[in-house]
Length: 242
Image (cartoon, rainbow, N blue to C red; front, side, top):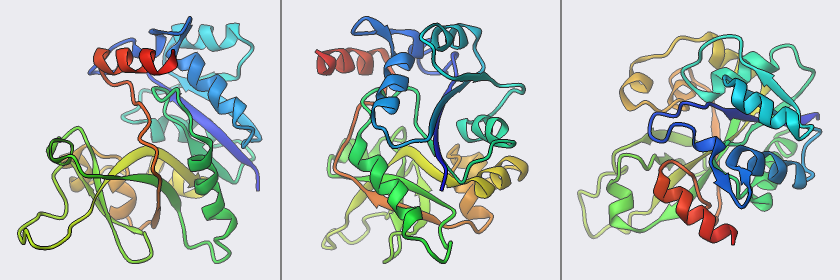
């Protein structure tokens, strides 16, 4: 299997515009993410795909691989799909541009899902983290996921799922981490299929796969990582980098 990493890099993020070009230990966040992904040595290729001339020039300046999006896109999956449509590749791993602390073991687990999937039952795989903090469980910025007994995703939501009606039940909550590994065809299907009501309501792109009957294998990881969504997140990342 040919496995590549694609890093979608949008400049004008709604909550923290320009975050990918913020300094992290002397280099922009997107550069740190790109270099960390290369250093995993898990991929046949690593490519940044962006809508920004600023980010394009930055990756180009370090000798990295980068492509410019031709169209405007609603989400990272669409941006990646446009870029890989004519590439010779089997598995595409979406590494978030705002997660510079790329964690090797978690990525290995995602890739292993496809190596073990002889029947090709899995369309995409993604990560989840067990969470216990009540504020995080209730926070709509934290996407939660529920799975079946084989760890296939049943649903994703910004609301707490499952709802804890019976307080005596030992309910476990899982946060969805936005790192995906796709079969190329599943990614292209996503790109060509229109958004439906549930995705539009929750603003969670992976719901589209479920609405069209795709199967998402969730892989549990213990690594929370640092997603840089706010200036406060950036400060935490800087301390961690030191």
